[in-house]
Amino acid sequence: MRTHYSKQVTPDLAGEKVTLCGWAHESRDMGKIKFLILRDREGVIQVLGKKGETKEEMLSAIDSISRESVVKVTGIVKASKMAPGGVEVLPESIEVISEALSPLPLDVTGKVQADLDTRLNMRFMDIRKPEITAIFRIKDKILTAGREYFEKQDDEFIEIHSPKIIASASEGGTELFPIAYFDKEAFLAQSPQLYKQMMMATGFDRVYEVTNYFRAEEHDTFRHLNEVTAFDSEQAFINDENDVMQTVEGLARAMLTCAAGCENEIEIINNYYKRAKIKDKNGQTKKLEINAPKKNFRKITYDEALDLLSAEGKELPWGEDLDTESEKILGRIIREKFKDDIYFITKYPLKIKPFYTMPGKALDDECADDSYSRAFDLEYRGVEVVSGSQRIHDYNLLSRRLEYHNLNPENFKSYLNSFRYGMPPHGGFGLGIDRILMQMFEVNVREVVLFPRDRHRLTP
Image (cartoon, rainbow, N blue to C red; front, side, top):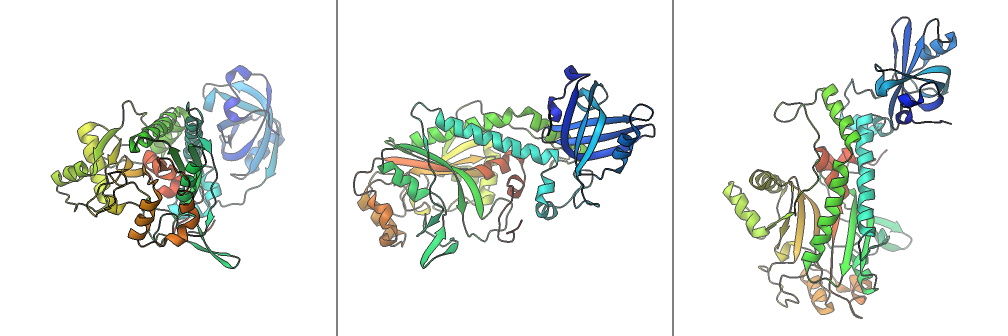
């Protein structure tokens, strides 16, 4: 229906006829001059009507179009330094394709703010806002950058798609969504963990997928959802967890570098902050800054993290996982002390990690409560965005670890079978796409998910 998007109409096209399609963002009546601002996915463009020069029916159309109606405009391009993008369109025809009801449930121009629940209830309209569109355009680009990173490795990764309906818990625990599956017990997958490990016994060696996690946690926080998206990966024939961490660093670097290069989208978001007079915690106009990593990611051990926290007056008993407050404090310490936004935490206690995590000493028969593990997290601005480890590849040790976690090996029979007939040393990770975007934009995680699912929200 269209010949151009708004952004493609430049002063170089002056005098040419174009056809544009989009939404009636705003209209203004200045007496002898009338403006229609048309918005499409690329931006906005000004349609200009002048009394005495523009056909009367075009002027009447501009007056009568309700905001957010879908319109088609055909006209002549005119260069104008005063217009958005340096151009405007002199209309020859204006067609209302779909009229929007009035009043609107949301103000798409951003002049009138709405609370998050209202925005999520009318998500299709919320996403029409340029600053919200910008978030999801950046999300699309970093997903592409992540896939390209995996595909362009010398020893390339193979993309897989694991099942999301499973017969037993992926990682143990009780946070499972049971579903009706004919006459069998089944659950939504907590993660692709078991299946991507099974792929290590096939000879694929290196796999990844963009996947969904389903976890029936009753959290009601800014950072938790019950359905989340992630890059999940596994690789075989590794020396130790450092090989996996190298892959994590490469992936995160590719994604953050891509995001930092999204200058148009960052400008749109920052312009919105200025218009809406949104302030940061210091009372200054909020500004989005996304920095591409310039150096190797810092690594600190779990014990070093506890020492740093203790020096700040935050005592955490050895063997406990870092809670939200501890992560936030540690993020501030690392940023102030080392100027780093992103860093690894390594050598976690084994007892707080899943059953498949390799003990600190390979094939450690003791699996004692004071043992270390070959697990790591990647933290971004004080929030965990990646969890990974070297995995156990020995069948006997894996069986013992299942029992140690009070899990019945019979429930993991298909998974365990893949370890009976030759399983190479392997490891992997999951990178939370929503989490990294949440930290990137410093927003509630619901803002970076199209249709978020939490304990209260099942629609739209």
